[in-house]
Image (tube, rainbow, N blue to C red; front, side, top):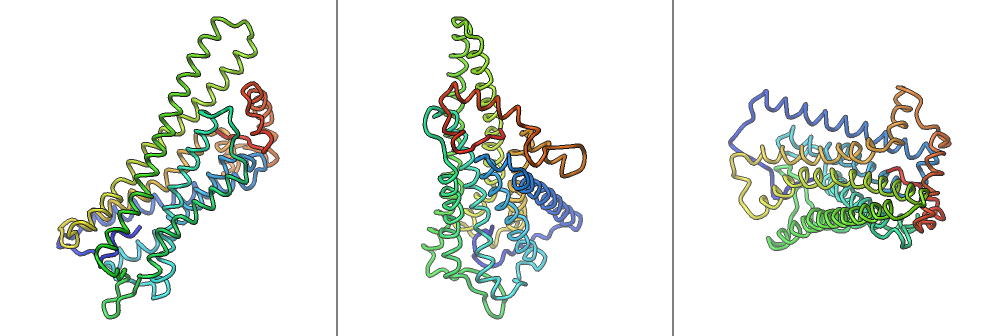
Length: 356
């Protein structure tokens, strides 16, 4: 979440008191809401054996863990820097070890979103092909956690320093070219490429759903096998629901991560340290990152009836999903019956049950 590792952010412009208070209140709201929502996601998956079987929920659980890291750990360092006017208050060990590691959380979050999109893409566009097994899903998650640590954190572990005297935690890049290359790679691997993949999966799913709808209309006119038509209708409805999930993913990811990405690039290629409103733009980019991590539970779980019932169960609002999954047994049986018509028996073989 560090903008440029290029010294402290200074500017002549000073926030009015009310604006600064509003900014911190907004941060607190996003952090509290995000932590609460992501903890509920993890509890819902971990405490319900039925939901634990879903590969989608496995990705969602890791997404929630990464977002908690962004909100609770990464943001703690950023908040300390904001309060201390970017003078490092946490000591040398946190500067050289923990602070760089905390930056990897937002990269993990982004690639977990890509993994969820890829899984839905495979399940809809390539429905007749072999679907992800839990073993392959875990390998994808290992890669999603290792890639940010290697690309984001490792260079910072090598070059991060706590500058003596001025007490600023900064990166002592060997030259300006390496500084530029580092942030170009970050923006490519953790914004441009993920966004391109998510949009690609989204468009392919839309095309597949349109073709399925056309096939369904033809079958309705020509076929007398009502059972097959009914199962096809249910399959199309389930796939359309998955598209409704991916639509806000594309929009929220693009909107919330664009300010931070643009600010980071501007900090590298321009002299932002002397720009009057640099600190204002920095605050806005941090808000956007917090909004991305806080919105994920809303996007990936509130649309799911299983998660809604589970949330209500944990909040004590009404009886939600039982731990043994009995309240969703009929839905599971219907889903398995539909899958048999469309050749997705290997989902059943791997114990996979989709929540959305």
